[in-house]
Image (tube, rainbow, N blue to C red; front, side):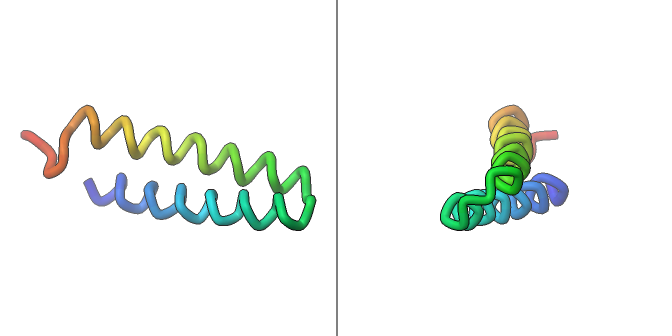
Amino acid sequence: MGLVIIFALVALLGAYATLRTLKEKNMLGLVFSFLTFAIFGWFSVMTVLNSGYPPAH
């Protein structure tokens, strides 16, 4: 479950970067930061939904 927490923190950082690059009008940075947010966020949410929190053994 520790890996999911780290990935969720990376997703939050990607969300912040998406907003910042959108404000700066940096399109390449926007694409990469949005993909980071989408991929890591999706993995975190689906892992928590599948395993539950706390994880069931």
